Amino acid sequence: MAAETGTPTTLTLKSNDDELFSVAESAAILSVTIRNMVEDGCAGGVIPLDNVDGKTLASVITYMNGISAIPADEEKKKSYRDKFLSDKDFETLADMVLAANYLNMSCLMDAVSAKIAQVMEKKSVGWVRRKFGIENDYTPEEEAAVKEEHKWTFEGVETDDDN
Amino acid sequence: MSFVGEADDWISELPDEILVHILSLLSLKEAARTSVLSSRWINLWKHTPSLCFDAQQSLIDKLYLDVELLESERLKYVKWVNSVIQSHISPALKEFKIRFNLNKSSSKAITQWLEFAFSRKVERLELDIKTRHGSSKYYCFPDEFLTLTNFRPPPNFQPASHSMLVAAGFKSLKALVFKFVRVSGGAIEFLLHNCPLLEQLIVHESNKLSKLQVCGSSLKLKHLEIVHCCPGLESLKVSAPKLTTLIVTTVTGLLLENVPMLVNVSVRCDPDSISIKRLFDVVLSRCISHMHTLYLGQYSCGFLRGEMDEICDLPKMPNLKKLVIEYCGRGHESLIRLAALIRASPYLEEFVLQFNWSTLPREDRQIEGAVANSPHHHLKIFKFCSYYGSANDVELLSYILENCIVLEKIIIDPDFVWFRDKLEVEETARLNVKQKLAPQVPRHIELVVL
Image (cartoon, rainbow over all chains, first blue to last red; front, side, top):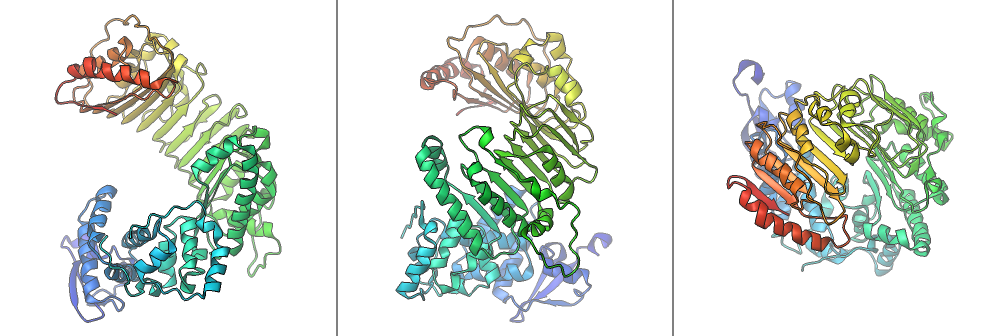
């Protein structure tokens, strides 16, 4: 193990489109999925990550390196996460949340989920549908029934749709 | 955010577990509103592990005064909670929170909610049901919950009744908050010893509590808050090896035994109930040497009437980093005595004084005479709330300016909540800060006026 020999161990990760990435073990084990593989001794060669593509994996590794370089200071870690996610578009966020879920990285999962949840906050149903391209497949009667059943969710709520 | 609208509907394609996770970060109302988006979303919110039935604070305040409205809103609230828990699907709850003006008249519903929460293996349970009527109208925690003490379900057990489910369910509790709920010491002790994961216990305003023992070497409890449970509470004995935070509003009958991890202590108590010397030497003696933060509230008369010698002879608090004193007086009391607490805490970094005084004009009192110089090498921040600029205020500030050699910041908060004409008082205070205090503060110290 790295801690015993004093030399940092590097892992090789393989994306589902066959790109290879080197990453320090100490950063990679932020992923519980990878940590379990390392602990089970499956990390000798290349670690295949069948559910993550190269573009997303590159981004996740940037995050792993960035966040593990910050010492135990939750505020600094949070501001790093905010900055890291600030320029990501919807599609990237969707890929990231899937990757974080597959890799079992709770801190990234929470941060991306919070970012997506933030978009929905204080917005009308119509606004959220438009923003995310959600197709309304209810018939008008069905929609009226669902609205009636969830009438309480519209009470005392002020939306601030900005476009 | 620079998101493009009219995108592909990638979000609806995410797996259920991720969408539920995202919804669990929204309020209950917002999460449930997504059911209207499309049929994909209709049931997702019912899987979120957190049910917080929060009414808006503005509504709660309004209902406090309007009895008729209260009755109808109360019925509506009960109906709301009932309908949500009937349709909710998640087999395990991280959080279940009730916050509304409720009283005994809703007992049946509240008991059912508790049964529901326990049956879903709730981890954090909060019942905050402030009512404007007297404490005799408070909801009473049913002791029937506790009768199945040694119930162990056999393998393949099919629960025959609700209460058996409940018996197994409360063992998941990690945090329990009861505010304005009548709950007995026996019930709390039962929960403490039968909830092996319980880390946080908060009880406010329970007049049914007379004797309580929070004792046990296997307790995981980290945070204990027993607030405004007097006059009923006669004794509180605490012996909890993992306890880090203790908040109490009575010291009469408080007995601390095995509390090696206790570092945050907050004590608010009635004036005159105990002297500062006795508080430190006897009540807090088990934790005084390792405390990090100490909050002393409403410590008016007991503190001031103590003999000067007694105050100077306080035990040292070698680990104290933050000290907050909420000090109630008429205004002319000597504040320089508080400096004894700074001297007793050589590693103190932050000192906050909330001086709640209420009488004008403030007489300028006789300065108590020279206080020995005693350099302090760690105090960086001093915050003075309700600073007015009278002789006693100035005396304490001058002491701090002279002795605290690494002081970086003085924060003055001229908010006089106790005054009806607080704006006038505030104006004088601000003028005093500007004209008299500011010129005295050296340049390397930041003076912040809120």
